Length: 229
Image 1 (spheres, rainbow, N blue to C red):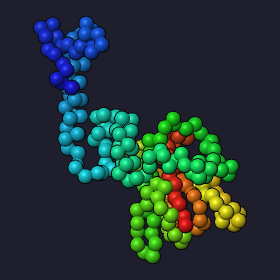
Image 2 (cartoon, rainbow, N blue to C red; image 1 turned 180 degrees about the vertical axis):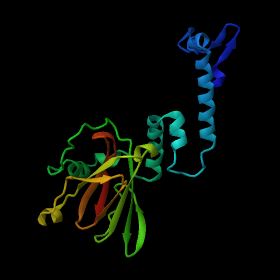
Image 3 (cartoon, one colour; image 1 turned 45 degrees about the vertical axis):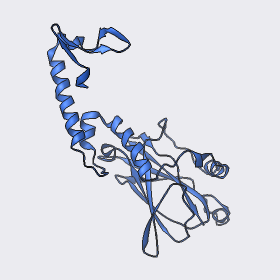
Image 4 (cartoon, rainbow, N blue to C red; image 1 turned 90 degrees about the vertical axis):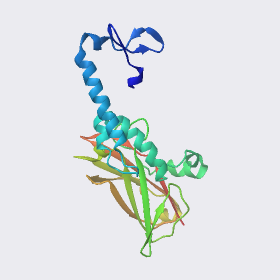
């Protein structure tokens, strides 16, 4: 950033690339405190970047303090979704069988206004006969009788303090319908980012997470699809 700042005899100059005669730093020259505040922020932001661990971590508080929770949350969600396979490419959602499952009549609608796009991710593991396996969104069918653990991934500060995650659980298929056990509602978890399920019926099932603070939904995930043999 500093390479774009020029220091001339009459003060700071940051040209507008589209209109070079416009100086983005004109207020700095009227109020030097603004320039000092920028350089202090810039130094802190650089330090928070270079001090990040090389491994993936869920502690991004230093970045959020300097770059802002919204920007960091979007970036982390994008990266971690790919790492955890928790938000697969959009292609599977366009499959005919998946579209039918996502539009079943017993899937309830949220009672609150939703964000325009997903910024949360979901990671999942399942356990069979004491052994734990990672499960990818819309992965290969897993057996019945397994335990499933889902975990929300998002900006660290979003998952601090008072928050509620509403998990929507939807199952489909003839077995669940025959057992009159079709589900499509919501389950609340307060200050807890995990949810547990058991694989019981064959079919295409999915969960979706909604993050609420003070009654408003501030973030959501895509549907995380679980196939059961």
